[in-house]
Image (cartoon, rainbow over all chains, first blue to last red; front, side, top):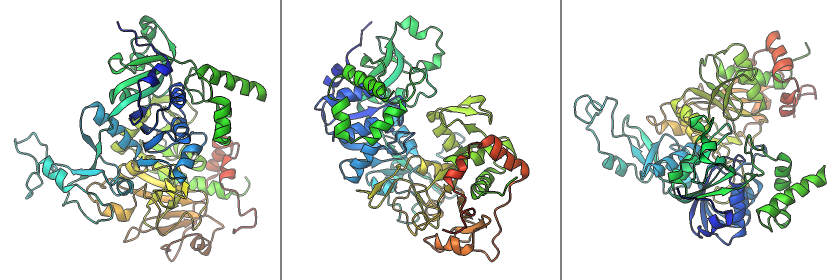
Length: 323
Length: 251
């Protein structure tokens, strides 16, 4: 069985500028921060980042590594606005593909299922379509009827059935202010494009050397989906354990990540810091406040000039100073 | 019991959003909507489901009764068995809501939360809004970025938006609904101590005001005791909406 363990720096050595990178977790929860910190130490830039954004987005934006962000938000949860993301947006420093939370999920699902898009009842009527002029809509090819009843495509009375191709054509070029575009009762949906990722970075509580990953907290977020949507997924974890230990006494549904979706495994204790990684560690609220209220150059100088060990030591020293 | 505060009327007005909703998820955002949902759950809407703010469904005493991670929460939204009460940085007369940014979207003057789940919420489940500080900067003629879809835009997509249902807007001044022929915003009730003139002055668009505006209902003695002693004994509600009547009213 292949041993996929590697260091965070080895993960980053497999990434390249210009890639589309998916980052797991949600807001300031179970973010693969040790991998993000390794990314900050590299020269990799010009990234398209797909994320339910937290300090991963904030830090990468603070150093100008994000060319384009696909997201519905960037938050620190207990601090509603991610300060560096906010500064980058207000400076016009990154391109934003602002999509709804559900649209993002369906984009990842489409990628994981090798579909070009999936229809979503979200975005229509909102300015998400205005600010993403490349988004297209599709019209349901079905009417009200049960499509398997008579061998004919179901259609509304007096209305011919439509092929998906035609419907896609008529749905092209949405303009939310353009007035009624739905013909009669046909439903029109956003065709959320697949968010195929060159690489995914996620952090879980436990993993084995093969790349099987287990989460122990309350929410899996979409980490399995990020891995399935990526050409290469890198999983950091609080602790690497033997496969037998990983699965012993584990409720099967906590075995979130499957090894066939994983390229590399990194042991990174406290690797989600300062975001939460329950039950191994809660969010470091005091340090997060410090991050959010300290000028970036000062924060980076003290905490991000060295390697991961230096980071963790600097955080401990910071806590000692305060106590 | 001492006089009912403005914040307590707001709790009652938020709670009323979930009256008659049955066995669906109440998703309040913010302290006063949360207090309202818990009040409704403890009194007139006992079948409501509530979350702990993360992935667990919990009883009013915190007892876990179920699991609702984000992936299932988003599926629940599209299934429609949910009534969310979101905030709004801006809202217009048709209930279009903005929480994304202020100014030009391409380079905003002020970046806010982002669209979050407002587009999917408003097309799929019942939606209400909570605005703790009613002002012309929030109640605007036109929002800068439509996140939550209002009635005028929903009307252009009748099939797609067939589940669109924006119920009420609760602010620190009153309750508003869309029970007008063109589905524009209407003053539904005033919190005691607030005048129509005060609401008009704090609203940046023309509001429909009926001839007789009812007052937001009084809490029952039991509701008041629940709010003060059980649901919010620390008085977080009073920090979200300071009691202006005690300060001499008005602004």
